[in-house]
Structure formats: structure tokens, C-alpha cells
Length: 147
Ligand SMILES: [Zn+2]
Image (cartoon, helix red, strand yellow):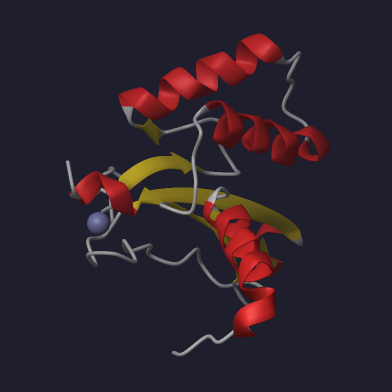
């Protein structure tokens, strides 16, 4: 893809690019009502994050798994869990939905995560669970393949 911002807008274009690069990337997926949660595969290398038994078997990119139904991390790299601790210290966080997104922002900020981190927000539920929608979060870090 060719992006030409022109000579006068070059600076703005660069600034916008830098702003985008300093934040994680987010992808939102909504399962049709009543369908089981999807199998999640790493977008960078195609490795499945969890096996059918629900055991974590992710690749080097997998940074964290936070199932909405459990309201806790079932997987996190050492680095990531350190950032969670940091974020917890800085906030009087309690798990209720409104604060959850805020808390995740704090973790990403504390960790200095930029666009190398891709976070999948997967919403599922519906009929089988009395219309309760559950949001699972999966984090994948592309920069980990370089180490
Ligand atoms: Zn991977």
C-alpha cells in the first residue's frame, strides 16, 4: 500500500503513525448468539492457544488469556504478570465490568505495550447462557519472536 501524505502533511502523518504505534492493537469479534466460544489461534504463527481440554498450549507470542467467565488470568507471561501487579498496586481495582477495561488500559500503560501487542476481544454467549454475553481477552505479542 502506498501512503502519500504530501510534502506539507508529512509531519502530521508521521505523528499519527507514532501515536498509533504507541498503543496496542485491538480486534473485536462477536460470536453469533448461542454459539460456543471459538478456538483461538495466534494471528502471527497460527498456533492454537488452548487445546480441546481447555489447557493452554500457546506459542511464544501468547502473552495472556483472560476468560470473562473466570474473571482472572488463566495464562500470562512473567513479564505481563509483573505489569498486572504494577497496575494492581496503582489502582483500587475490583472486578466489575466498567472498571475492567480501565484496568486493562493501566496494564498496557504500565507495561509500555505498543502496537506489537494485539489484543483479541471475543464476545460469546447468548441462548445457552441465558443471554449473558461473556468477553474473553487474548493477548499476542509479535515482538517476542525476535528474542
Ligand atoms: Zn504465535
